[in-house]
Length: 463
Image 1 (cartoon, rainbow, N blue to C red):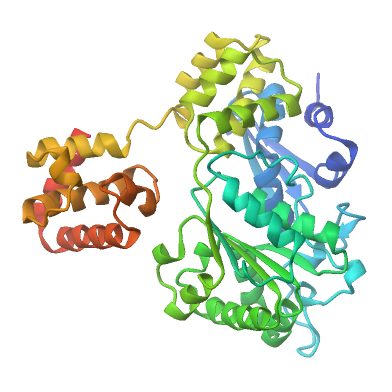
Image 2 (image 1 turned 180 degrees about the vertical axis):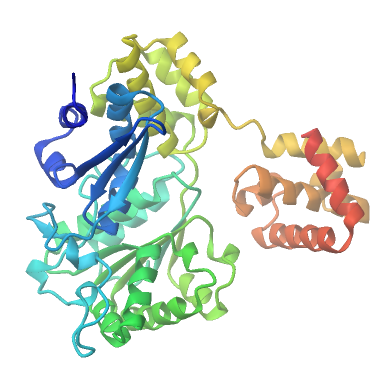
């Protein structure tokens, strides 16, 4: 009878066959198999730190689930047990220790900087960039050409102030994290003496809270002020975090004043960020705002071909075309679908063809094509308010046209995931400020007029 440990080793064997030796040694050897619950079908594993967990979830989730489905069954769930192991090692760029980005333990001398803020020499400094996310494998298309070009310029000419700060925004899964890691990696390659640091906004906040608890706030700020290129991912998570924003404000000012590069990502432009002081939002807009849009059909097709080639799969051209045309969400969804096809193929011993792809797409509602578009919503609004498309898109300020227009903007923002810039462009080439004004008007009216709120809900049922 096969033991649980032997089943786990089978999982690792499947994973090893899909990674190079460095990747497997770095991200799978430190993992410990803890247990398997037959009732809940949960596999529990231990990982050496919170940072390890966050990085692993972001980059290897699909791969480990593919192996688990094959060995333990397709309904298997993965549970993490984060165990902070002393001297835990991640062998990335010459055996980088995980301690550098781990939240410091409580206690210790107040005059000594915690591990997270210790300023190492340049030769020992760990950037925590993803070495697999480079410009070479960042596939260019119409939706990302400008941000990619700007990013290359920042990496190759860090002394220039034109694009400082660089604020990259766009919907989830459009390649923001890949782009900023590519920038950091190229900069490190060209200027090895530069101290480049990648950190998520969430981890920055955790570090700051720990620094405050242990009375080491000054050490924390001094460490971040020593960075030559600071990359902060998902800054929208700073919203409402008053103390964290205050610390980031001082770090930002110091770096910018001293000509250090600041790069940030967000799922929305600064004008849409809430619960942040105007002085912080103003600084976000000092340099370059670069929007990454959701990939178009051709870019999705190119990305799929790259993923298929990377995974060594044999997927026909018509399947690639079908997936590219029917999955419009983001790159991460494309990666997940490719891994899902691989897992189903391995488990059921079935070749991947068009019928197989359609079956998987139908079975996984998570991957279905988004049905609602701005045009769909406009069509519903025109029927409900009995206005023409010309009247809704036009410049007339008649109350009935303005109301229909603003309801369309509100519902498009709520249901399509499109940016206010794109919504404004579609609905009569209006500015993002006009769209935001319309959205806020509808939101306020719904709060104060219950009958109007009910009307909006009735419209939504018709969409």
